[in-house]
Length: 402
Ligand SMILES: [Zn+2]
Image 1: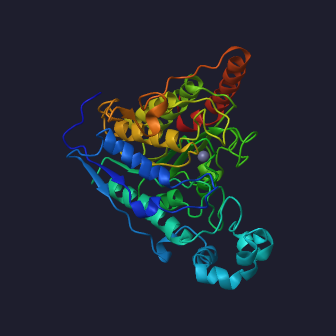
Image 2: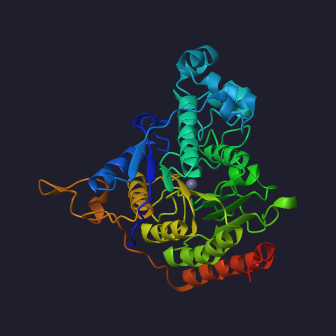
Image 3: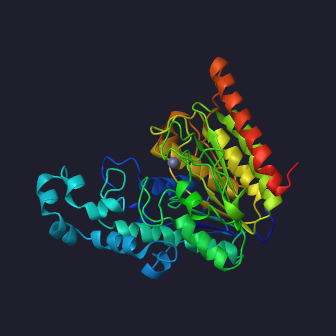
């Protein structure tokens, strides 16, 4: 592990209030993952260091949210966020137990609200505003040079649109933070390694060369949001500043890192951003119930290491991850890497002779890598070669990369 320089400072942005929200008992997005991550970080001695601060966020106010989002959408989200109002608006729903939800109020459906993916739960506005507050706080701390690295575990809602919710995302904290940084005159790169395409961020800055957006994700041929193909490279002045690496099903650590190393370091070097925002979704994991990649946290950690090396300053965001314990492990490892810390003792979880918690299966936080074989491997490699050749021919020349 390389030495930190003496000026290194970092911030973990977190509050129990944010982690306590619940979309619904059966919804795959579990904010509690952030609390599990904090527990793991504590257990592996990754918090009590003189350069690390754990900082509590505050919710963004309506006006700050409106710097990116549509006012009518925000107002609707705010209005529905009240149990009293819900009873008034949807008495049928309350009495029927929810089945009529989709037919009750077309107005909220227009905004993507009240669906299975984006349910209206108690405190939804507060939850989204607080999560965006955490991301903006991290962005400001990093931009001001207060810290070199910040991590908001409950951030990275890359699917939310200007005027609608989608894909478990109500407020696009990333677009809000980037909008703020652009106003400060900063040049920003956004790198997303979540298994889903960063469609909301792509859409927000598709014609803007002041933001370089790079998204790695399972191909839109096989996975929501069904977009993020390699030929979506930006438009107008923004052409070449939106980069997609759609990964075929079964992509493993080795194949992923081959694509990541070919794309991210040269582009970040050529673009030379003031700071990098990274969405570190852990749903690329082979055990994730929603996706079809074959990665482990070995490839995930390598990507985080490389990102840290290539970023002058870095704001990391948690993003997706639907195997709750695997996600907590990946984020804990990421926090260690961002601070040049090894989790202190893999047996520290032995209490009273019993291993407890998320690392129970393998006795440590780290997975063993998985190698795909035979014709599956050939197919994955061929597809990745094709994508890389396309990007080298179309995007790289715009950035004068040989
Ligand atoms: Zn995802």
